[in-house]
Image 1 (cartoon, rainbow, N blue to C red):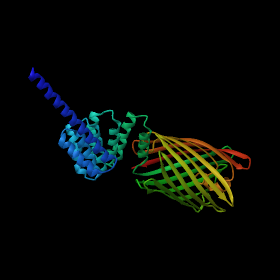
Image 2 (tube, one colour; image 1 turned 45 degrees about the vertical axis):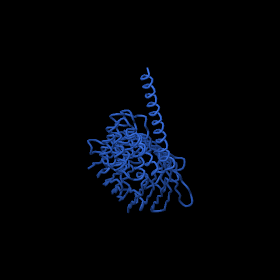
Image 3 (cartoon, rainbow, N blue to C red; image 1 turned 90 degrees about the vertical axis):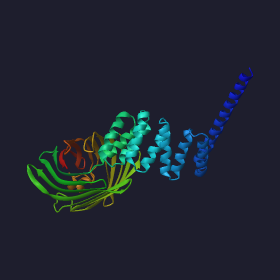
Length: 416
């Protein structure tokens, strides 16, 4: 009987001792976490964590905390050691996978990060964070096609994630290519004997991630009662170039010696990424015709939301102290690449960015104009960019007298 009582007493003492040790260990972990996260005393956090490991070698929270402390003090090899130790001892420590993959991404070790994240996903197949981190790791490889393929799979897995859709759309809009192409615009008029007008443009595009250069030669022919009454050539140079991490610019210069075109057109716009899919632009236009100089300020706002792009651009034009506004609203829905989309256009007024009627801008700028149109653009067989667009314009040609104009535009480019 005495032996039984003694055994019970000894077991009770052992249990109480273990409970006291656990309480002390938990308190130590709490104190170490406080020093790390609140007071930012990383040296003290490390000291307490090492003491915790000495008292409880298998208590992996101390190893995890040490890894974070070393990471925050830029001792990344040591941080990597502790995170890997936690994963090796207990691969279901989700936080260890998260910290280690973020460390590898920070160090731009794409391959190491992907290995860690693939293992994490095998244990946590429904943890969205790991899929998003893998996207960041893949992006480090600078392989747009690979990143697009992975983001596409993520948008299918998370169809309601608008940020993912925006990211995918913005990446698709970036490309590196050279293209040579031909555009043709045919314009008819509701008035008898007026028209048709023909506008043909031959262009070469050299597109890179930070700089795009475009050269274009245009030929216009205007007809009346079946005969050509005016024709000529125009020469254009256009460029888009990066001006910062969140901005880029557009510039254009066009010259001609023919009366069918302005003598000189200068254009500039500055575009700024405003965050959350929004983009703003400010610009200026100058047109020198045979009889006048026209100036315009441009203000625009755009929005990317998933595969959609919406844009409203305003032109504030003045001539001889008179202001003539014009507005253009555009909506697009993108399919697979930046070359695959449908578009709808509506507008009021004559703007300096309209190529077909630019030779008559001095006569039209003070007159009313209401237009609406739609277009479809498609990349075929990876090389051929085709486009078809129609616009109906209800144009005032003299005060209170209107005509209907219909523009049919076709383009083809070879991408190489």
